[in-house]
Length: 439
Image 1 (spheres, rainbow, N blue to C red):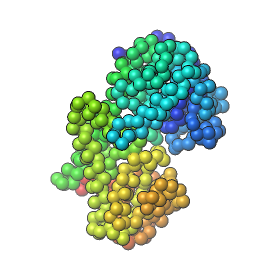
Image 2 (cartoon, rainbow, N blue to C red; image 1 turned 90 degrees about the vertical axis):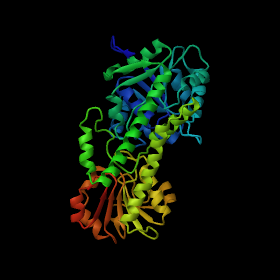
Image 3 (cartoon, one colour; image 1 turned 180 degrees about the horizontal axis):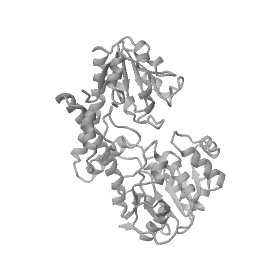
Image 4 (cartoon, rainbow, N blue to C red; image 1 turned 135 degrees about the horizontal axis):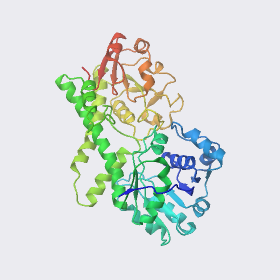
């Protein structure tokens, strides 16, 4: 059922438990809309930095929005979930739901947070599950709270990393799942200023919408990767083919670009979770299982393209990599397809020298475990390389001097997994160009 606004909402007091991508963006945006927001995280050092207006993540516009909220007095940060929840009209649960060993989402942080705030909620408070949770999780939150005088509402997020603030403030739709119609409408009024369509449904449908959207987008990416391979086989140009597809309003251009595979903090765990949910209800989601398998095969395919470009043998070879994050506009490395490809290249004996705009030299962290050496500039990482592979679609890569990169390579070849570079420019620089379905 679609919610219809009837009057202007008044500001509310909101607690946000868990200040990651979703929680921090939610807190900053709700404060921007005029609400009083208390954002809670267990990491005291992180809370102190955020209280100074310093975002812990790279996200366009987020720092400005945080500082606006702090200076207005509407946004504050704390480690005290009990005090924050006791004053709140709405409590948003934005804690992690990592993938378990069996593929299912792990709800322990959601249940722990629910149990922790339960004694402190004021009567009539609405607990909002913003974390991505399996179908049926609303009932588990109700059980963990053990309160009959509060309501639990499902409110999945649809934020793209790198565009989270824009997506939050300009949503395609707001989805609310609630058994209590009044509670659902109360939450809907919180979103009224955004002017977006608001759908109020039952919790199971709301929870399913989130998984269905991410699974469909993952399938779309895998499909276009397969089309790029077909283009190579038949001699078609994938750029033209995909452009021709994108003008069809039934298809659209979003998520219609070939690449090294899909990854990030959502698609891998959400597709696995949806497969597991289907299994738990005796449905074999074979189509989605094939989508996941196709994505793994794409990592192998790209690594094979690199091996061929490097001369057919990666043992002892050096490969340069441009881009490590799972997509442009974020510093997030979680389940990055770039790292999945690099793992396969390293397994064949290659040394990998990498450059990423968000990762200065010396900040290897867990990348050191992958055998990746970071460089300060895109040309230094090409020194002595047998092949260059472009793995993330950072716009600035288009403006780099390919002649300069080629001049320090021992074998001049580039595998452009994002079809970002101009083949003619690459060839003029002396590079053998390999794209995704490019003629």
